[in-house]
Length: 257
Image (tube, rainbow, N blue to C red; front, side, top):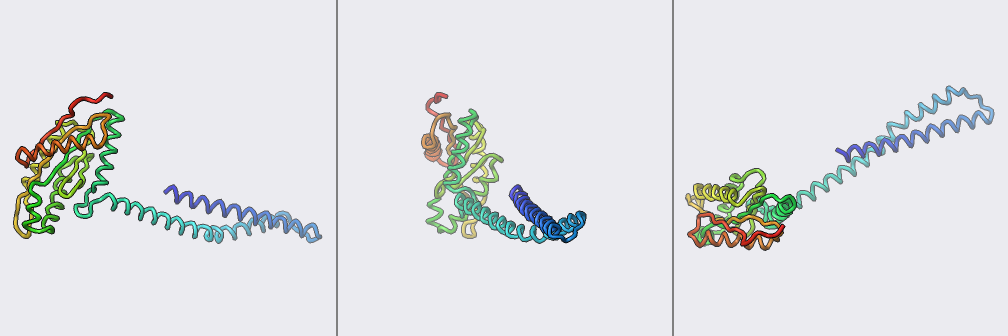
């Protein structure tokens, strides 16, 4: 909207400049005629100059506005195309949720906010249990359908500020802003139960799929690698304990603020 207003303002300025020049030129011509002995009525001079300015205003405005509007439309189209390309670069084509790059960017932003404002932030890493068995038994196309369905279930189970992304083949990273470890564990348990209760279509047959999740809470001052190492350890604990469950991993010590 601001760009459109600037476009109209630019055209108006050009029109005013041209009209002003035309008005002055008309006055100069009339003054010259009067100087060389041609009688002129001052009122008629002003009227002629004003009429000329008015007649020039509309075509000049149209001539200026048209290329400006065309340039504005092309610029807007280029901006939309760039935004679409950025979105595609950050989105997993199969599951339609953020890919590894997209969810990592979201996590880094959440870490910066939590570190700056000293608010809680938790993350979870989920991994589909025995996913290789699904691919080996039913084929990769069936595995892709399971991934897409599971991603939809996870997205529907999250709150508005939470984000989930496909971090690896069958791994999903979840970001819980403004959420403590205890709160995140409850949400992760809700996700686990929703997946376990769902029925997946595998080559026309109904199948059950389970998900293991590890959860941890961000500590102020730590970096991305340290946070991911801890949440990965939590996921390993859930797998080692029998799968289809949630395990939490606390920080070894409180970092200095």
